[in-house]
Every structure is written in C-alpha cells, then in structure tokens.
Image (cartoon, rainbow, N blue to C red; front, side, top):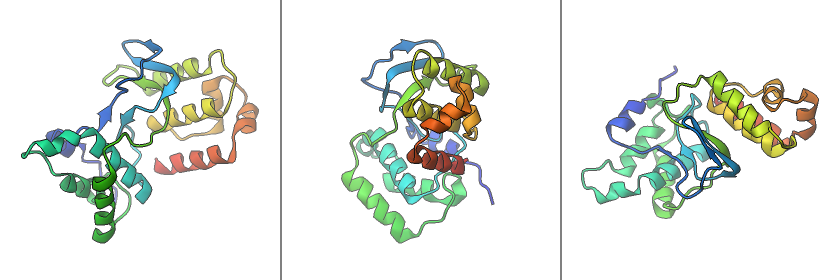
Length: 209
C-alpha cells in the first residue's frame, strides 16, 4: 500500500528540513535561483521530491541532517523530542520510507545519531538551487539547468552528475537521452563519460522514484 508523505506533521511542529548555504556565496543569484559555479555542499533540502527513503543508510543520513538543522530544539522544553521525530519518519505508514524497521535497529540508529551528530552531514555538491515557491515549471527548471551547467564547459562526470541530481529532484527518470538533451550533446558523449559509479548512482536514483 502506498502512503502519502505526511509533511504537514513536520510543518505543524516547526521541524526544519530545508536550509540553503549559510557561508558559500552564489556566483549568480536571480529571483528564481542561486547558481554556484564551483558547487556547494551546504544545501539541505529534504523531502523535496517524491522519492522516498529506501535504505537504512539513507534513513540514517536523513536523521543526521534533521538533527543538525534542529539542534536548538533541545533548548526548548516544549519542543518535539528527537526520538519522537525519528520514530515518526521511520514509520512506513507516514509515507517517508518504503520499508519496515525493527524497534531494535531503529533505536540503534537513533542512539548513534544523538551521540555523534551535530556537524553538517556529508552532502552531495549542488550548483543550482531553485528558490521555494518560484512560478517555474519543472520544464523551465530543466532548461535553466541545461543552460547553466552546459554552457562554456566540457562534458565530464561532474556535469553529468549534476544533471542526474536535478532530474531526480524534479521526479524525472534519469535517461542518457535526457542528460544529453540538458547538456546539448550527443548520447554517445554521455555514454563515453559515464563511469561505473555514475551508472550505479543513476540506477539508485531511479529506484527512488
């Protein structure tokens, strides 16, 4: 049975699950997006696409991010306890994960996060961050991605990976044809620059949709 993600529960309790870069400065900023030519690891936008959490590793990373973004919660005695927040996310009925997890395993993960969390978790590098509530359609965003990433640079693994991330974020299946279209090159060029790691990541991201 498919369950819709209960994001309202988080909003009602003022849980922070989005944060733009706090010290990295964008190369270009418009009313619609920020562009970081060298990329930034400081973008945390959880639950931004329809993709759900499919592995223990991904679930733990989401916990680390939520702990990092909401560290001030423990200072408020009326705030939602982290343990309760994590259990809510891990409950399949709430629409965030695709699998069931035992109480023992969940407690083990939570204990590790509460013991070792607090620093910015390792994150994928992003170049383009679209602002919330922009009137742009997914097609508009993909066009901008192609223009910014594909302009005046060679087609390499980094450019391909950025396109893969953006396609996934907007709920589109990653195909060689779509990546080639965004980068304005041939599918042969994409195949030539797709390493084994990128192919594995492509499969992983598509499996999340």
